[in-house]
Length: 239
Image (cartoon, rainbow, N blue to C red; front, top):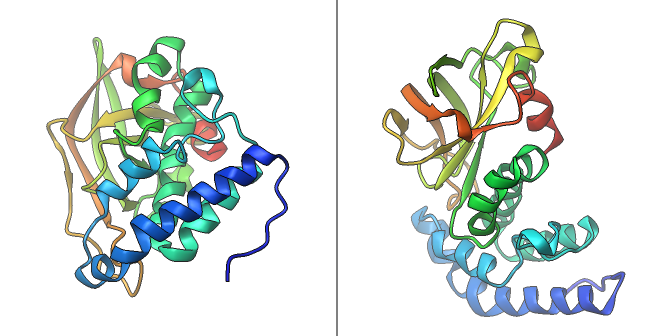
């Protein structure tokens, strides 16, 4: 039975009704097949984006819904109640977008954020490494500047949407100054040298792909760095 929710406004209550309608019509009928086949539901994220649900906590001027974060969280709960993998994926996509919203230039936000919030560009979040999970400051993935580009080399573990995302929010080391030596980059999925290892074999969330992302001489233009050099870890930990 659906939960009785205390919503702050009539508009937010309508958003819960919209979410439940989409869940009942678009998600519940297919979730069992997708989980059984370990099939990634890319079109579901487009549906959520086109309905405005992926951009709820962001201001309307950047293509968002201008809703309090508490409303967004309850929407994610409704999605996850029917399809846990899509609920997780919705949260990971938000992690991938938030750094751009918080630290991106106006030009960066205008170029990428509308399609991200609209579900046309699906994101992945690349912080952890096999030896640097709870201590991200120990990461070894490096970004070396060469002119107007950075060259990235390393591996990012346990990446949700790995191999399925359209862009990757990658944290990489630009200096040896511990946590202050990490920078943040938005890397398109089709960038040469960026590949996904074989998906992890999990006990659940079968339709949510998890993989290690490999970076071998991945060239990223300077304009795809978010914030200044050394600001990557605060950007990552902020969301």
